[in-house]
Image 1 (cartoon, rainbow, N blue to C red):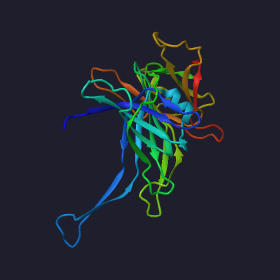
Image 2 (image 1 turned 60 degrees about the vertical axis):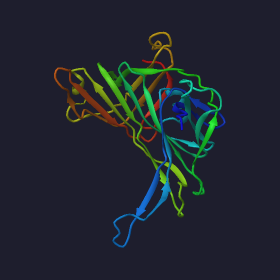
Image 3 (image 1 turned 90 degrees about the horizontal axis):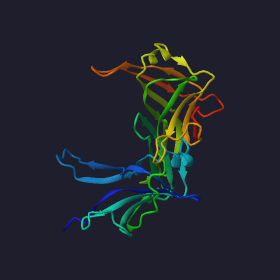
Image 4 (image 1 turned 60 degrees about the horizontal axis):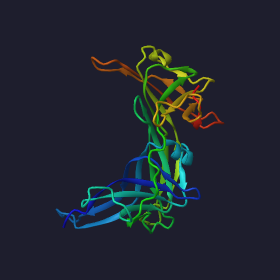
Length: 307
């Protein structure tokens, strides 16, 4: 039997009243989530019985189209009441090219939960966002993921926008020589099973504990938090993502097209400082954002100027 072709990364789509085809999907994976039990008994050497006890499928994706997804789901989670679709794009062996028409593969979830996981930003690299999609079935009797062959791809606009590392300010003072920022959004979901069902009955957001970790080159950086840390003050700490200008360099700071993440409560610490000869040393700075009783621990803006 000849090789038909291979699949490469395709599009993803959130289905609701304002359906969004997510741009710039960089990575995708389907975890079928099968829990297979294998049993032996009575001193047997080999197992004699196997069965799928339960199955909890989920999809994991990475996108550089931050604004499109963040405007849809925010920083916590999005209930997928109308569904989610993930596409695998066919490259036919006969042509060696991406195929046109209804020849692609689709994984569809009718209901579930979309959970953003982390945002990674580094010097000279576009920022990216990882997220999971968890499928559920209220009756627990039907697989949450439906696979369909020979489908057309949704319209994809390609690269709509990119963001990269921008200024980072702690208690109102800009850090110098920032190399990278990792924002762990800290979303923890619970997946509920029961009644002897094979598939999850529901999923919900259990806790949210965002953490920001920064790598800095500046020799003065360690003194900002020192050995005992520094409290987040009345002036918010802010991480900016600077938008890249298509066919240009950077969008002007005064233009409200950048992205920011703000923290107004917590404690900054420097957990480590180090490096290897002959390279320079890096200082790590991190904060576990906490709730002040009014504002979310981490506040998002996807349309802000840099100030």
